Length: 393
Image (cartoon, rainbow, N blue to C red):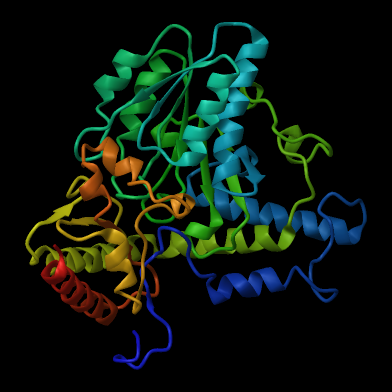
């Protein structure tokens, strides 16, 4: 951690954005890249292609096991963004084409941009979208969803774990409401898969997306779970080869599938023990930061994923605080919003004013975070918050 701690690299506290690839995952990927390994095209009809197809299906089974799904109900994508787009755009466009009812969708103002932006696009195409507001702790009241459902509602999209504040929504309750009205429920589980127990059949969801790079796998590969019988409710986004049973065309990147599958298997094996460890690190980090005055926790105090902590530091500008902490690699919010100076729309949806929203930092501990890292982070943040407050006008 910086020169003072004898480290050449800062402590990584941005696991909610992306995780490093586990060495065991990298080994699985490397085996699919050279002539000595399983390098073929899974769609080819020769022995190399057959072996590649077997390897791809092994990875599909590993990924499906992480979320309690049958392998045949999982479709490969390029990541959670594509999974979310395929679910939202695919469902709405299929419903409009069937002309069974006008397309109305429901989502939440604190969703990831890969949900909100497709909804905005559908509005341009003539659909209507209801954007519900979470409460001040980031949670959506199921009764608010019940009140928003209409006869013409075709899809509800609610994320499992919020990527900025880490709160966990009551997906089972939402699924029950949607099932009563025969409305599809889509869940963005990018931050929850591999971090919390997740069983799509128990939850009763129709569509669920997740990605490898949030659980120590490679970037650029993800999956969409489609509940049995719901395939016809989706239109593809990509055409051209018929792969993935016609839902997602394109040559399968076997090395990425192998890495994704291995990452899912490792996450499933360590789920309970690792969740408890991360929750302990996160709680220690919060206790250490909370000793400063004018510090606010963003999100529900207990209904949250183990590894994410989002904190507002009153009287300090978040960008200045980050710049003063070169020994820590953390973030002010979603990596997808890093090109804008606007305060977090997620925190604004919780009722934080612009000044407080701009004074927030997101810490996320992960597989390679140690207790010593957390102590050093606490010390560094305390030091710089006090210093910045001391020179503030």
